Image 1 (cartoon, rainbow, N blue to C red):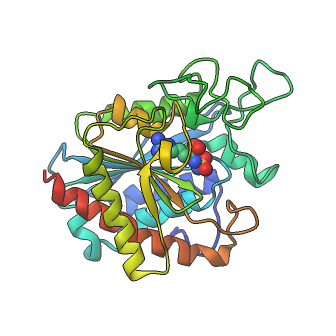
Image 2: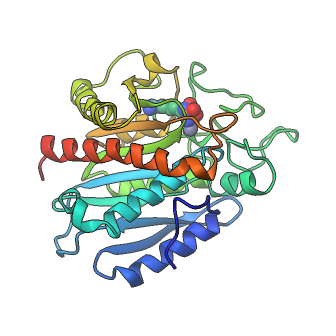
Length: 309
Ligand code: 0X9
Ligand code: ZN
C-alpha cells in the first residue's frame, strides 16, 4: 500500500512494511536490503533508488533519518524524499541521472518505537547501560571518529549525550557505519536528517578547526538555504557544527567525512514544531516536508553540478 506521508506519523514496522512494497512497485528502480538489527531485534532496512538505466556504481547520495528517536519530522522527511524520487520521478529525474540515492529512514528503531509507546521525548537507543538506573546511548556520539572527547559528549549513561562505553558498541551505529563504509568509494553527499533548529551543520563537530574543502561544503549548504529563503517562508543558518550549534564528538557527519570519505557531509536540522519542537502535529507535516524538500533538492542539484559523475 501507498503510505500517506502527509496524513500521519508512522511506526517503525509500518515504515518497514512500506519499504518492502517498493521493489514490487518499482522493480527496476527500488531495492531494499537489511543491514542488521537493532538491540531489540528490529530489522534495519536500507532503500536504494536508481533511475533503472542499469548503470552500476554511480556516485551516491546517502540520507539517513531518526538517529534521534523523538525527532519525528525526520522519518517523515525521509519518506517524503523517497516518494519524490519514486512516485514523482518525472519531475525529479535529473537528481537520479548520474547519482543513486541510498536512504535509511529509521536508524534508531527501538528508540523511535519507544517514543510511540512509552515516552514521546526519548532520544537515545534502548540498550541498558552500566548504570541500572539509566538506559540508552546517543547514537550521534557513538561513532568512531574522534570519539570520546569530553567536549561534545558525555561518559555518564544518564545523560542524553551519553557516548557509550566504546565507539560503535550499539548495533544501530554499527549498521549505519557499515552502510557508510559500503558506499565509501563513491559517497558524494551524506545527509543526516534531524530536528530541530533550521541549520545546515557541517563537520567538524569535535574541533574548532575546519576540514579541507569546508568552503565547498558551505556552498552546497548555501544553495539549500538560498532556495528555501527564496521560495518559502523558511530561513536557515549554515556553518560548522562546533560554531553554529555546539561541540559534538563521535557524531555521524564527522565519521562520514573523516572515515567514510564523503565529499560533503551534513546534518540538516529541520524546523521546530509542536510543544517542544520535536513533536509537530500531523497538520504541520505538509508544510515542513515541502519546504525542506526545496532545500534538499537544491542541495542535490548543487552537489551534482559541483561533483559531476
Ligand atoms: O546534538 C546533536 O546530535 C545534533 N543536534 S540534535 O538537536 N538533533 O540532537 C547535532 C549534530 C551535528 N553534528 C555534526 N553535523 N557534525
Ligand atoms: Zn538529532
